[in-house]
Image 1: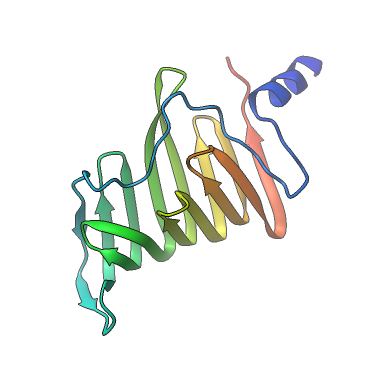
Image 2: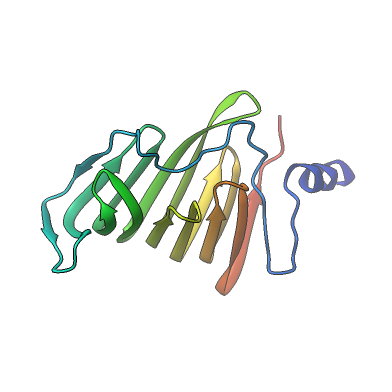
Length: 170
């Protein structure tokens, strides 16, 4: 029991003031989409808004970059197609996948929610509605989750509270 509690406290520190949960430290940070990344976007339909640099996608939206993948039923992209500032995706569920390097090992961060917003200026992801995020064997779920990619820091809450599942190392 004490050994498991020690692992929980050393592997995933929990700061309950605002309920923050950093995922495992990353040696190589993900910096978000960069202007050098090739983006591949697929969708059944797309239309530009009357305002410049806003594009709406409907039906099977998928965006892929070097270390990222977003998929959803619908999406709104703000900014240039080749250099987006904000991407909002909606679905049941909308999904995000980020490839990282953690402790010299390849690691994948998976997130899903009814709505996911990637904000480039803050290099962050906000997930709303039945949100969950996981890396390796660790999972957090709640009504809302915010993930600061640069700091590798999570904040979660919302209706129904949060649920954290941590599996001990073998």
